[in-house]
Image (cartoon, rainbow, N blue to C red):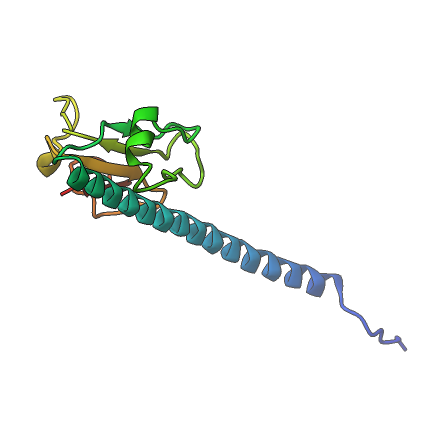
Length: 153
């Protein structure tokens, strides 16, 4: 007669480990997407604040916009752009990841290079935009789906 031991077989343990591994990979994939969407939401809010600051500058400076600004990878805006908006937005937005593919831009009188898609309604206007990590189908100015635009009116 065989003794029955009170334990799990190797097969049972391997099946449980495989199931836990599959569940954890699904959770981590969902978590990564949620983080991307969270950073994109932060970008949208910060760019909306930047638009409001530019509008306040416009109203207080005889209908003149501040010069164009580009947020580089290091998070530095041009000094004249920072100085112009300091009373309205003391800390200019810096991308949450601060990597090469995600930057913020603010351009006055947007021009158009014929080798690029037409910017449509954005041409010649003050435009603030940034790059999103999660694709967005609401792009308006003729560029890629991962751009987020706001016109300053």
